[in-house]
Length: 86
Image (cartoon, rainbow, N blue to C red; front, side, top):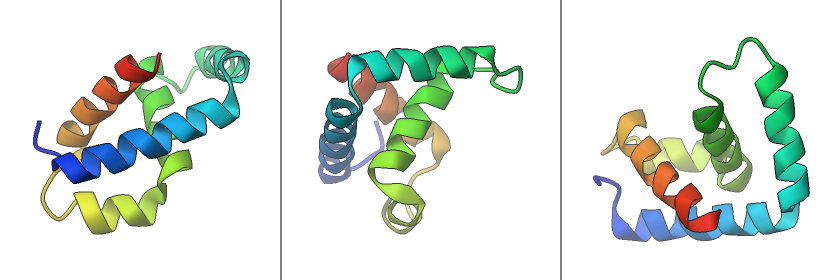
């Protein structure tokens, strides 16, 4: 994984906090809403990226991650975070 350990920890902690605030029931409802949207092609990817953006915001991602990594690297980290969280 190309994401720096300190950035991974920041993302993980922020996403865990967001998921805890949001709650499992609300996450399941949101997942159902996304599944019903014909524009969503990869449900799991959309869900993890939505949680990321709700947790750290686009500015942080652009400033801290994109100077050295791309979306594929970031998505690998997000998959791991979601596996740990759920």
